[in-house]
Amino acid sequence: MKMMRRFLTALGLTGLMAMPVSAAEVAYTSVLSGTVTSVAAVGQTVQEGDVLLTVNTLTGPMAAARAQSAGVVKSVAVSAGSTVNAGETALVVETE
Image (cartoon, rainbow, N blue to C red):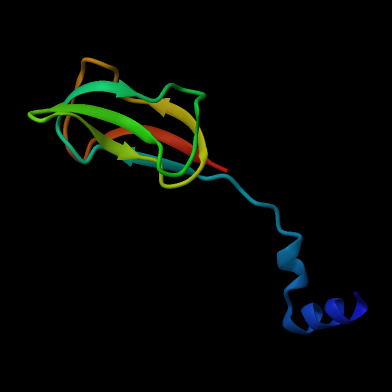
């Protein structure tokens, strides 16, 4: 263990091991335009790849936003039945 500590100290990495992990808020935008059919709820825990927003298209409901990392939904700017445009911010997720 002392050998490992000396090695990490030599590399200057000991401070990195004790750094706290901070959460970040990530805004998710819709990649499709259309009528919102479903959206994640505020307070919902999401995992990477989870569908956050579904939009009705000509071929049926399609995922318009997916989580890029695990976190908790902090705010939602659209609701089911409303219209969303591509590039419009739909919700904010606080990552873990």
